[in-house]
Image (cartoon, rainbow, N blue to C red; front, side, top):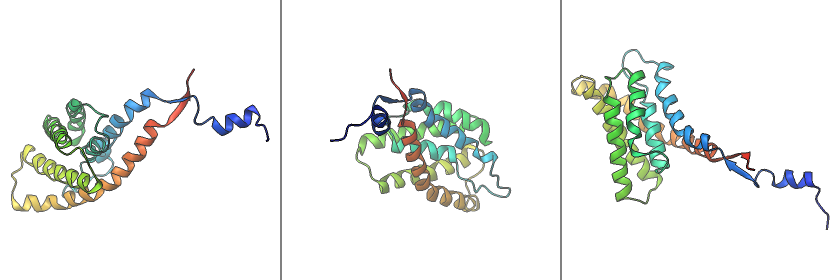
Length: 184
């Protein structure tokens, strides 16, 4: 039997033994990604009609649906306020709508603790459609048939974008919980 040197042992087991995840990274990644997604409309602008999905809200939904215990229920208030500052909506609209979404998702989670991909996508789709329609009403526009038809591309793109963002969130969650520094 061949004996391993200490350097071979540390190379072989160094990535798994005596490591712990960064508490700062574990706490900040969900909030930072939601805030960055709220800033994305500055990068991609549409002139005639709203096409860009509400990325901050979709990221909030994704984190809440995929990792229910990561964020507290009240997080819709500060993150909604941040989104209101940069979205162009009247101040308080995202605070109200994001908080209501967090409460409703908590009720759904309590009622249906088992989840699957299709249920998550359906739940997110209902929340996205409700959010876009309510945001139109809160912004002061009247919900007419032409206005609803103008929002259809944004709604469809948002619903189709959710599975991709769920994969991004899964990767960010792995990064968030990855072991990075030595303990002791």
